[in-house]
Length: 116
Image 1: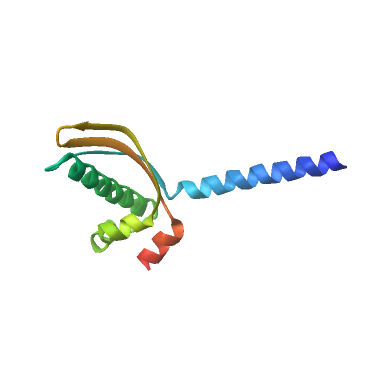
Image 2: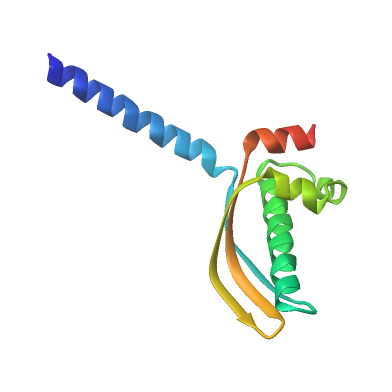
Protein backbone atom coordinates (compact mmCIF):
# COMPACT_ATOMS: atom_id res chain seq x y z
CA UNK A 1 0.00 0.00 0.00
CA UNK A 2 2.87 2.33 0.85
CA UNK A 3 4.46 1.75 -2.56
CA UNK A 4 1.22 2.56 -4.36
CA UNK A 5 0.86 5.78 -2.41
CA UNK A 6 4.49 6.69 -3.19
CA UNK A 7 3.98 5.95 -6.88
CA UNK A 8 0.81 8.04 -7.06
CA UNK A 9 2.49 10.91 -5.21
CA UNK A 10 5.52 10.76 -7.51
CA UNK A 11 3.37 10.72 -10.66
CA UNK A 12 1.27 13.61 -9.36
CA UNK A 13 4.38 15.64 -8.53
CA UNK A 14 5.95 14.98 -11.95
CA UNK A 15 2.73 15.84 -13.78
CA UNK A 16 2.31 19.05 -11.77
CA UNK A 17 5.88 20.08 -12.58
CA UNK A 18 5.32 19.35 -16.27
CA UNK A 19 2.13 21.45 -16.40
CA UNK A 20 3.82 24.30 -14.52
CA UNK A 21 6.77 24.24 -16.92
CA UNK A 22 4.45 24.44 -19.92
CA UNK A 23 2.57 27.42 -18.49
CA UNK A 24 5.83 29.18 -17.69
CA UNK A 25 7.10 28.80 -21.24
CA UNK A 26 4.72 31.50 -22.46
CA UNK A 27 6.66 34.11 -20.51
CA UNK A 28 10.11 32.72 -21.37
CA UNK A 29 11.66 34.16 -24.52
CA UNK A 30 14.73 32.31 -25.78
CA UNK A 31 17.48 33.17 -28.24
CA UNK A 32 17.14 36.93 -28.50
CA UNK A 33 20.22 38.06 -30.46
CA UNK A 34 21.68 41.51 -29.83
CA UNK A 35 24.63 43.25 -31.46
CA UNK A 36 25.25 46.87 -30.43
CA UNK A 37 28.01 49.45 -30.26
CA UNK A 38 28.36 52.38 -27.88
CA UNK A 39 30.98 54.79 -26.52
CA UNK A 40 32.43 52.30 -24.04
CA UNK A 41 32.21 48.52 -23.53
CA UNK A 42 30.14 49.02 -20.36
CA UNK A 43 27.68 51.30 -22.14
CA UNK A 44 27.46 48.81 -25.01
CA UNK A 45 26.64 45.96 -22.60
CA UNK A 46 23.99 48.05 -20.82
CA UNK A 47 22.48 49.05 -24.15
CA UNK A 48 22.45 45.39 -25.22
CA UNK A 49 20.61 44.36 -22.06
CA UNK A 50 17.96 47.05 -22.57
CA UNK A 51 17.66 46.14 -26.25
CA UNK A 52 17.29 42.43 -25.47
CA UNK A 53 14.64 43.15 -22.83
CA UNK A 54 12.64 45.32 -25.23
CA UNK A 55 12.96 42.82 -28.13
CA UNK A 56 11.88 39.98 -25.83
CA UNK A 57 8.97 42.10 -24.57
CA UNK A 58 7.81 42.63 -28.16
CA UNK A 59 7.95 38.87 -28.74
CA UNK A 60 5.94 38.35 -25.54
CA UNK A 61 3.31 40.87 -26.66
CA UNK A 62 2.95 38.98 -29.95
CA UNK A 63 2.53 35.69 -28.05
CA UNK A 64 -0.14 37.28 -25.89
CA UNK A 65 -1.78 38.59 -29.09
CA UNK A 66 -1.47 42.19 -27.89
CA UNK A 67 -0.70 45.22 -30.02
CA UNK A 68 3.03 45.91 -30.32
CA UNK A 69 2.33 49.62 -29.94
CA UNK A 70 1.85 48.95 -26.22
CA UNK A 71 5.64 48.68 -25.98
CA UNK A 72 5.97 52.36 -26.90
CA UNK A 73 4.14 53.27 -23.69
CA UNK A 74 6.35 51.09 -21.47
CA UNK A 75 9.73 52.40 -20.31
CA UNK A 76 12.95 50.40 -20.28
CA UNK A 77 12.85 50.51 -16.48
CA UNK A 78 9.33 49.05 -16.42
CA UNK A 79 10.40 46.25 -18.77
CA UNK A 80 13.51 45.64 -16.64
CA UNK A 81 11.28 45.27 -13.57
CA UNK A 82 9.13 42.64 -15.35
CA UNK A 83 12.15 40.37 -15.92
CA UNK A 84 12.58 37.61 -13.34
CA UNK A 85 15.54 35.89 -14.99
CA UNK A 86 18.06 36.55 -17.71
CA UNK A 87 20.65 34.21 -19.18
CA UNK A 88 23.34 35.61 -21.42
CA UNK A 89 25.01 33.23 -23.86
CA UNK A 90 27.59 33.57 -26.62
CA UNK A 91 28.72 36.86 -25.12
CA UNK A 92 31.35 38.69 -27.19
CA UNK A 93 33.01 42.02 -26.56
CA UNK A 94 35.23 43.61 -29.17
CA UNK A 95 36.26 47.20 -28.62
CA UNK A 96 33.02 49.08 -28.05
CA UNK A 97 30.91 46.39 -29.74
CA UNK A 98 28.91 43.91 -27.66
CA UNK A 99 26.97 40.91 -28.92
CA UNK A 100 25.16 38.07 -27.15
CA UNK A 101 22.12 35.80 -27.19
CA UNK A 102 19.68 36.32 -24.35
CA UNK A 103 17.10 34.05 -22.73
CA UNK A 104 14.67 36.21 -20.79
CA UNK A 105 11.83 35.16 -18.53
CA UNK A 106 9.16 37.63 -17.54
CA UNK A 107 7.14 37.37 -14.36
CA UNK A 108 3.50 36.84 -15.29
CA UNK A 109 2.26 38.90 -12.35
CA UNK A 110 4.66 41.74 -13.16
CA UNK A 111 3.58 41.78 -16.81
CA UNK A 112 -0.12 41.78 -15.92
CA UNK A 113 0.43 44.61 -13.43
CA UNK A 114 2.41 46.71 -15.91
CA UNK A 115 -0.14 46.22 -18.70
CA UNK A 116 -3.19 46.98 -16.58
